[in-house]
Length: 289
Ligand code: A2P
Image 1 (cartoon, rainbow, N blue to C red):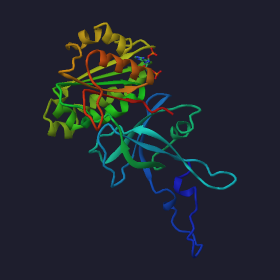
Image 2 (image 1 turned 180 degrees about the horizontal axis):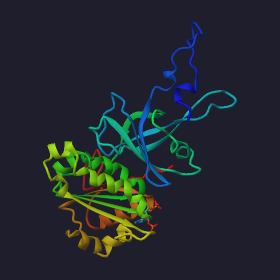
Image 3 (image 1 turned 90 degrees about the vertical axis):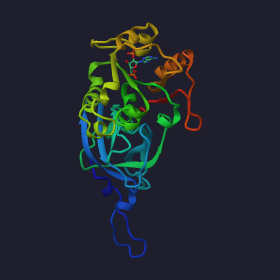
Image 4 (image 1 turned 135 degrees about the vertical axis):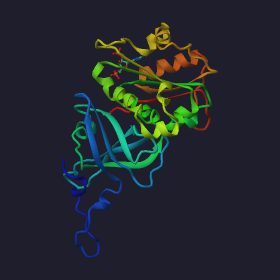
């Protein structure tokens, strides 16, 4: 891939002599690590803009420059909303992405390599934040597919363990391979120096992880929605059913999943919250190409 600062030669208007090309990409960040998890999923890390502050669980617009327009020679950025998968304290940024063969962005983004540049607009927003929830005893993170990304951030966020006695993360994917990123991340928490120091040794015992698959054999099969409705998930996790007094929840997955789970939480008596009006659960869609 062509380094982004080589796409547009920038000239000084007065002298017409070439100047450094960086102004063409004011929001460029450098890729520091790329991991391919399956033929359809990858994650990558990049440098963090020095001025960027965000809350764990938020998203930003990221992308690449389009090729120059053949007629005008102008280049425009191609941006998509991506949940930040790294926690707010991390020196770098992490993102978790699907690879869509004909997707305008991910068909190219999947080929990024260490040293390449991406564009990152430093304007974080989102509803999957602790500020949008009122205090509770347990927090449920419900994810499908790449909807795990904001929870990769929140699971590494000290406030998650300060605010709750129990942290339940459910992740439903089609195949077992799609669970790997999440599983490895959760396993790595045991050795997370910052969390062990800030929250205390053994903080990870607060986490209950419930991975399920729907189209490939795995130890637990089925949609989380069905497993909750049948009571099987409660039995497996050894927890009491969802209730508005104890439970807070965040939902991030495909649209049908988000809507179904939202209806289930409403049915259980939980109210939807927002930054401006914190309540008992929040929902966001996964940002697919
Ligand atoms: P299923 O295979 O039964 O459709 P996708 O890859 O299409 O985004 O789906 C990710 C996961 O979310 C799949 O395991 C899929 O199950 C599951 N899923 C899709 N729709 C729903 C829903 N309405 N409720 C619960 N899980 C769902």
